[in-house]
Image (tube, rainbow, N blue to C red; front, side, top):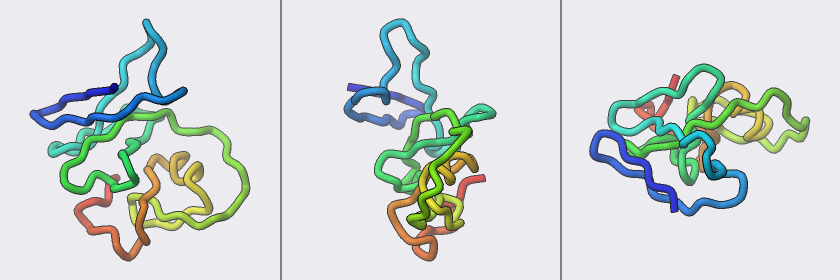
Length: 111
């Protein structure tokens, strides 16, 4: 179980495969939340369930990919921009949304 706390809010999730650091590895870095905490350079905020930080949700900073497949499935990034796939959104520094770009509230758009 992964529990991150920041400013009184908590992110609870089930650790699975490579999503959880190995024993002795680096601890996950929380992002988003009520303060909109950004990730360090070279990382993006991965929100649980593609909700783009709505409701002051916390995410976990993940390393931006350096290469992506060329498949083009059309996903919407949390910045309300369209991308060919989630990897390309992550490369641009944003998480993919589980909604259309038209449905993302302006308050969810992260830099």
